[in-house]
Image 1: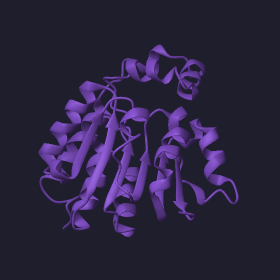
Image 2: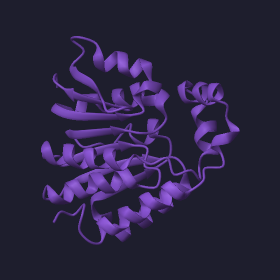
Image 3: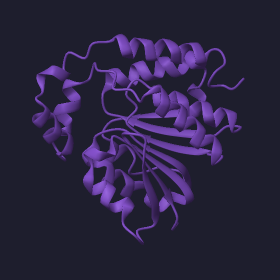
Image 4: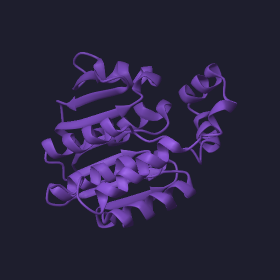
Length: 219
C-alpha cells in the first residue's frame, strides 16, 4: 500500500476524479475552437481564458496523475515545483510521491483564489498539507524568488503561453537528471522548440497524447 492508493488519499482521488468527470464546464462552450486556441497561445489573453474557466476542473487525467507519481518516485524527488494548481489533483499525486520518498517540499502556484481555497481543502483532506506551499498569484511573480537551490521535478500545467517563461525562472535550479513534465505542450510551440533543440540542455520526447517529458542534462 502506498500513500497514493491508501486512505485517506486513494478514496479522495477517486471522488475528485468522479466529480471532475461529472462536472459540466459551462465556460467552455462560450469559446470557438479558434478563439480558445488564440487565448491559450497569447501571453496576455491567458488571463481572460482562465478567468472565465475559474470554476472548471481542468484536471490531469488519471493516467497522467499516476505518471507524475511514478516519475517523482523514480527520480527520488525531494523538491518539486508546479505551475498551475487548479483544484489540486496533480498536486496530490506529487505530494504523495514526496511522502513515499521520505518527505520533501512542493511549491505550487495558482492565480485563481477560489481554486487555491479548494486545493488547500483537498490537501488537508488528503493529509498532505505539510508538504505543500501554495503561492497565490501570477506565477511569473510567485515563482520568481525564494525557490530552493535545487529542483528535482517541474510540472507545467498552467497557461501554455508561459511555459518558456516559467522554465526560464527555474532552469538554473534544475539539477542534472531533473524531470520536466509539460501537460498539453502542443499549445506551446515555443516551449517544444526549446526543449527539443539539440544541444539545448534537455532530452525531450512526446509522451502519450498530450504530455511532453523532458530531462535536464546540462545543469
